[in-house]
Length: 303
Image (tube, rainbow, N blue to C red; front, side, top):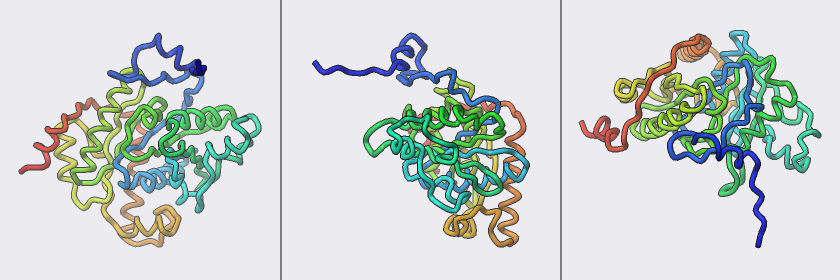
């Protein structure tokens, strides 16, 4: 009979309460807690602009004098390239190159300094159809702690893949203080946002994470987002219009703060700085209640 190796963490987790209703997630190892930094996990529908939002928010925090680490959690490892001006190697690729002997790694092997001192890490992800994103997140945090990189950090931002809320890609919620959702003013974005609210509610049963609010992105108006927020108890933290200059900043591999000044760009920069400043305040978490799928259709789809 073939021998199956079961991780010790999986065995020990069986005696603990489930991680949300019906979840089989392994609980976070207490030794992998990040520490004193404020930790934000940014979620949203795929293609909604989470990486652009995350990078500009990291830049804004740094301009407010904070020491920031941004962790990209996507196999395509493009979360931080507007900060670093390049696609940096992933933690998983680097670990594989040393046959997963993490003690052989130096800080400069997996951490890259970006705009205004923002430290950038690309966790990467498992090959398609194999492995678990939660393992990747765990290994990244473990490495950062082993090299004492979190001890003097003020802000950690997880930029998380798409609207996936399976156990693996919900793993950053185990570390985060606040989860932020990026959404456009359309049905698909709001449908994904509702699923993410469900995931955050499940994680909040056993972890400190709470929902911080919604960042409206690529939207001239926010009436549909506002309607959903009013119904479930969310709040809009910031609003970024569908501005071509924001799209061009990504093509130019730079943050919005490095673009040539125009009135529109200055307004966006001010909004990012305002958002960062508001997130530094220890506001009370939101009490939210997700909707059933049919309720979203009835709320938004058939006026």
